[in-house]
Length: 238
Image 1 (spheres, rainbow, N blue to C red):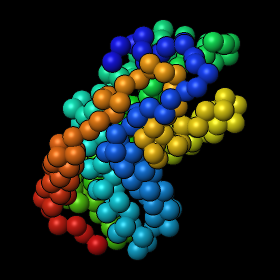
Image 2: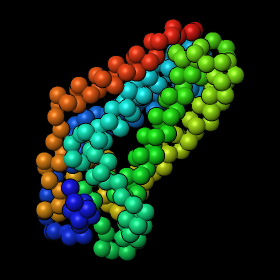
Image 3: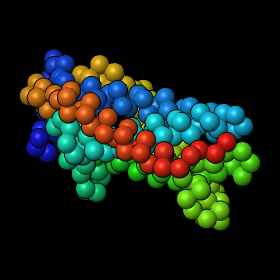
Image 4: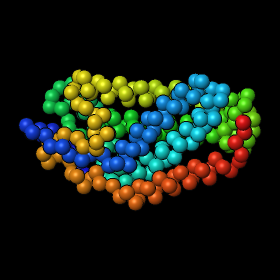
């Protein structure tokens, strides 16, 4: 998909409901939302809730691995090349928000695209570190025994601190969505639910949002298998 079609400034009186997000992107997106909420709750409760915390962390890791891989082999709109742009494009977009005409983007805008990448990277690091963490009382991550106790303690401390970075990015993402809804009259939630976005005629193509279900399911099974293999290398303490 060309940058010109991704950032067209043309508008029409009657926008067309155009397929934007394929079903794997939408399902994984909301699954990550549920996992993050559960991880925050169980992480704050601690105690017996840590068992669920670790299970949710493993699920989140598989979801993040899938979304990153899907960003390279998925449908046209799901790929990082469809929405990642350089600093100049991000600055140009920010300026267009302050003064019309506003840029129109099929998927993520240049600023939002980098926010998505930041979230994926921090969640990947956070979930990976969690495998080696411990609470110094009852629970150890599935790989905590594979490293020295000092290393596990260090990673545990980093895990606790990085958790607030992930939460901060997630909150910023949510706030931005509601700012667009209230200030710009753009509903970014609905397209992530139904997969379609109202765009000017000629902006975006249905083909770019079509995903191979066989490829998506096979890739997700592979990601789950990779995480399962990693966490089952050593028995979980508790």
